[in-house]
Length: 181
Length: 164
Image 1 (cartoon, rainbow over the protein chains, first blue to last red):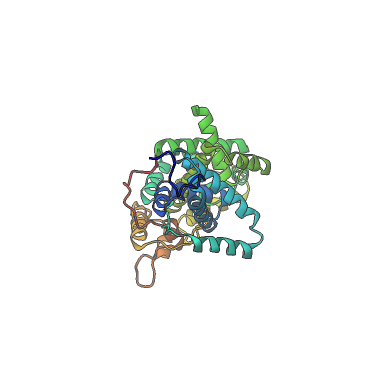
Image 2: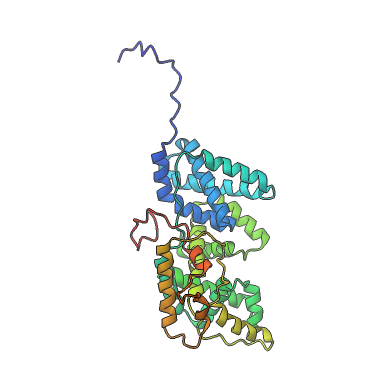
């Protein structure tokens, strides 16, 4: 190539290209389920989590080219977190929020299919594992998860210290997680 | 990350997801989520476990009722409530997912439900609540919601629970 350079070369750096829809879709397939699960845990609202997840991958399309691919997962979590906090700040202004996220969703140029957060095979496995827990641990798990009673309420009903209830739940979860994984 | 630290983080994340942290602890943990990928992963695991347990405990008939030491009536009513609530249609997911499920996933859940009912819960007539006028099993709304958002591209191996 001539040292004189390409006559069309203006000397300005070439702006990085945005990620393609195919690349974004690939990242969604790889990380979307976990991002949505994360947002569900933070926002406690599956519909809001869906909206914020869409917004997160919209951001990926807009600015993902600035992130390093090897750390894209961390980048996605960071963006998801900030989008969730922004959503929460705007939660009181429901009309504006709806407009913001509706607009974002309508601007999305790729179709992001819904993610299955809970798998049937996992449900069946946990169902069996729960039965293997000691009775007192099963009781606390069912009271907290199924009945949605607080640990303090459970401790009051059982007339045991709160720490005892917390310990039973913690041991139960440790076992479930160990067996589950 | 060492095992004790990982277990502590997992426990902290579960308390956060269940809303059991104090306001100050919740704020502190949320600040950590801003740039701690391991904490974010712990929230993912905790959320998934909590949601799975929510559905699983809704399907399983209650085990032998834990004897309550309290002398008040609360424990007694609690025990009665547990027995009937296990088969009640009014169970809600922790995260309230009302989106309807696909017929295939609903059918699989129904089979799980049947399996539990056939396991010998003869004393419970709560199963009748599930029968509609035609005598077919009516899938509860919350059960359909539990398997909502099923991806049409469900080509992942069944045992592939964790990614990467």
